[in-house]
Image 1 (cartoon, each protein chain N blue to C red):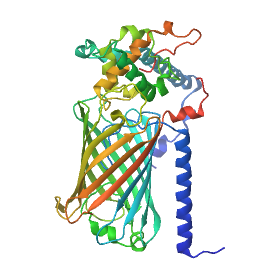
Image 2: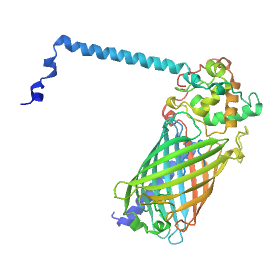
Image 3: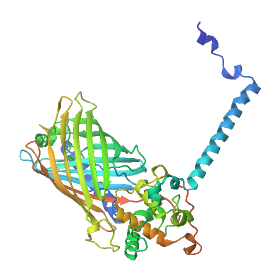
Image 4: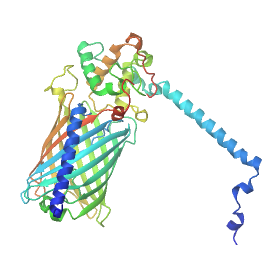
Length: 303
Length: 166
């Protein structure tokens, strides 16, 4: 049966989304386990790496209604695996839905994080290297760099999906843990590999703390120890041809995480645009599942 | 014809039978030496070398929550959530992950030593850092692990795994 091209794309997208949903439902059933010690950030990376052998599966979404464009929902499926104590690798699949427009798969990313210092220090550096192959219809907003602006979010999907960006992204992640508080700072440099564009820069800062520092010893649902709260600030820093935070987006917002006992962890954050180049508000939601020692699933029990 | 062409003689033709065995012996010796070094590294790992890295101020740290029933109960919940998958629900080790009820952990290592290990991890050997976990939680886990006692107190018939990887 011959479908028009647009229908075929829509059917393929739906099939992909259904498959992702099915996989996640299965994981939810079998991997009833809270996520690790990750602070409640959406854009900022902390120096905490995935525990070796653990696989974390996250679904992240970003919703916004920019004044000059249609409302959209950007979605990311993240698969994060702890290869070694000092090395974490992560794969992302991005997609989005725009109201009065379309739903589409926008690309993939693959990143690796390395911890060069094997002991804990007051400031712990982590090096981040990412290759991304996405089109400009991507709405995940996992980082803001260069002169990213709210005007980019108003481009119709039919036009935006034609422009493919192959980029290398480098981050210097600094993290500190002091008296239960986590402070994380990210410095981002991004370079397009398929276009002669200048280096683009960005930053992300986060601070957070669990609402209770010890465990009550009870398996309770709404205990303070299951929650963490904090704030996140991030934005662009221009390019090598024009450095600074003018003519780029900047966002600030509170973040909260809720670790459901023996279940997934839910992250929630409204993030507010700080200038005219930003969307007024981004609503972010994430659900994380952690499969501990994923290799054990394939080994004999009672080992 | 240049010098390179002149020297291009098949290797086997250049080396007579006896001389050809000499490099093979050298390779064998090198292999044996590498095995010996690997064995030494394994022995160093098996004797809990991380203990020697603990600074004196951590070694002498006492657990402020030691022996408190509420802390032990809290530690039990945290242990089940964060540690049991690798070290086993009974802390007797799992796969290559070591027992936490060994003589080394229960008697030789002080509470401060374990606190240092939880903070720094042993990243080369697969033990992650738990520095993002608040200090009171880490002390609760230590209180719980120490409350389990040595392996002889465990159920008979279940042999603990020897500590090798930490």
